[in-house]
Length: 157
Image (cartoon, rainbow, N blue to C red; front, side, top):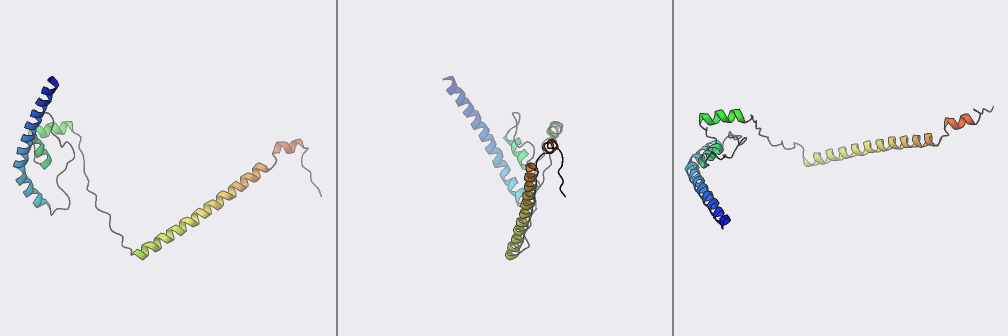
């Protein structure tokens, strides 16, 4: 029964936090809509979600909303966060530029690249085959220790 009661207490606490968050959200909706509509013309967002986007035990839903919307926290909070948090940098990637080649040009380019790769592969295979053949010849040649035991070289004229 105690577990049931603790679950009920947790649910009540969760409901109160939810209601507090709902009220803070309702309070900030109009302000956010105005700010977002003015930002729609910018190329990249000025807000940064790097760093903490959640509020710890001591914070409340209003503080979380302020952290997410980019409003400046009180001076004491910024001083504490600067000492504890490492500085993070954020970048915005631009999309890759589209190819300036036509479809036919891209096809011809890919065909040339494939032919070059095939030629390079053939050359590598030929070199590798020649090296294997030389290795086989060297391995099949009688060793110098066998020659010396046979009494040296035989020369015919």
